[in-house]
Length: 244
Image (cartoon, rainbow, N blue to C red; front, side, top):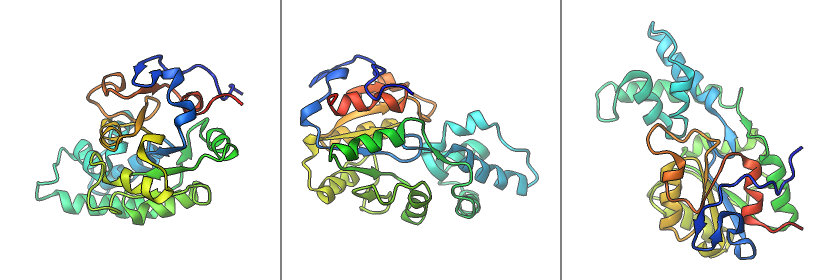
């Protein structure tokens, strides 16, 4: 099993030193995106959108292509699977069918990424609260968090409809900081999408790009201007806590 403090983060220059020195003693809490950061949910999301296709007599779309949109929810998956944008007349029916499929099979193949359980245990052992800030709707977030075994450990769970704005607006992250009672400047936000990094920076938090996640199909994580980029979850620990 890899050491929790394995040097897997890219050594980027940050306002706090190098990536391997990110905040350390100044970090008091860690917030995570859900899909593509804490949990690998792509198989269930892609299955839900492909059922919309097969129910309409179309072949399933390619998994690897659709996986890239897994962090973008219905908008990204429907767009990739059908070439339909939210403003198109066909979008609402396709979205509703996708969400119904997904809600009916929310956590069949979804799993926490390797290294996440050990990371969360390490944070708990240090007395460092962690929470979830996702753009997923509350009606999907809370059941999924419970099924993944995260509900009891999370200090807060903020969904895409918890505040008036979703990421990349900083409102959800600022709300999470308020919930856990820790100033944004002492929080690290980890996410696998450019909007996660934009939201974290706008909220005044340090940011870590999870390059092991879905990451979309545009800019590479190294171009997101995050404070650090990690290739796997096991590399997050040395960024947010010093070795015991």
